Image 1 (cartoon, rainbow over the protein chains, first blue to last red):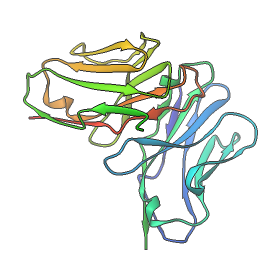
Image 2: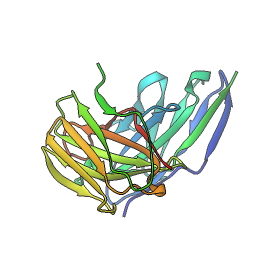
Image 3: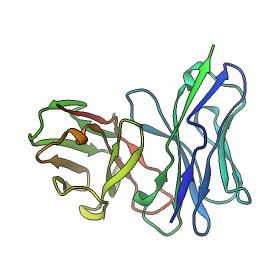
Length: 115
Length: 114
């Protein structure tokens, strides 16, 4: 069975500071990993994904994530946070060869960026 | 142009009623989904259709019945609504059912059962 953990329910950072939203996963074989963002009263929006290749993945809005196989992690990062980054962030994992709908989503981390 | 659109956005109804949520995607995708997000924001897959064929049917009460008239549309009908059905329901789509595909979500339908 696959699983994903987002150990922090809430992350608070000051505007301009770097931010990290943590994600660890468990899956058989090599994973597909995703980050999605949900703004208040909106649907989830795709940020980035790791499929294969370079462990550092760059995505939308200046976000990036690093796939670390030995630590089974896929932390989301941004060098300089904006107030507008405040939202709910979901990490998701899929086992290769399964259905996209079988992705497992984490419980979400609420990011608050203060001016 | 909205890629995945669902209606209604808000729905308040009484227990025991039957209601439907409609979804359409204009991305040309083969696969569509229904997800449920509860009050704690946890997200769970309910159903998935690939080219009108049901391919995922998670543990969902049979009061919930999805229907896909064509691959661009996936509707969700709920019979005999219960208080516990109150949630946000997201329609979504992906290019196909392959694992690495990005899932594109609609804006959600906020269902409140009173």
